[in-house]
Image (cartoon, rainbow, N blue to C red; front, side, top):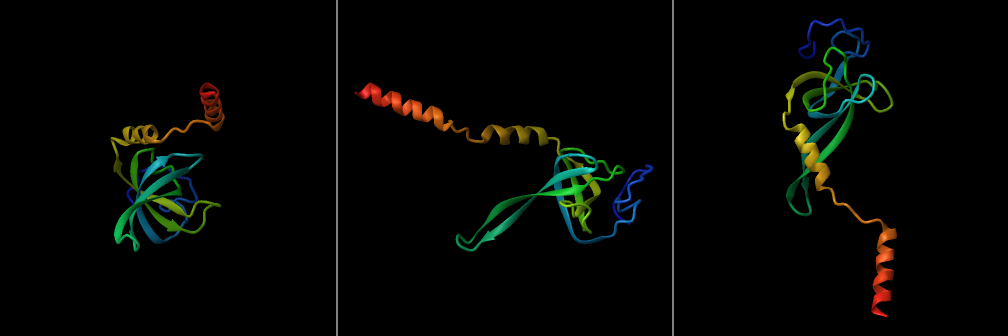
Length: 138
């Protein structure tokens, strides 16, 4: 039916291969950024969006919560294909159907993203610096 899976005893009712979940709609490729709680994961999808104002394309990212069946068991950094299904919970409307491969530079990219974020000074310290500079000028 959907995807390649190992011969594993999968007792998940929400698994599209071994359970009764029917697939429909969108088929999306993304990377797993977090393997969350019980049989859940978060994937990131990158796409290009056309901006009419600037007449150019811009990159867009979106995170989607998905169901991660135990027969597939995708980890952080794995490229996966997900497909739309009925709502499985409040936030999950997609299920992983196939694991394509892994991104061997995933951890380094995540670390670089964290380091590149701008660190702002707290406002309390900024006010103290302004007060000390005013007292020095007087």
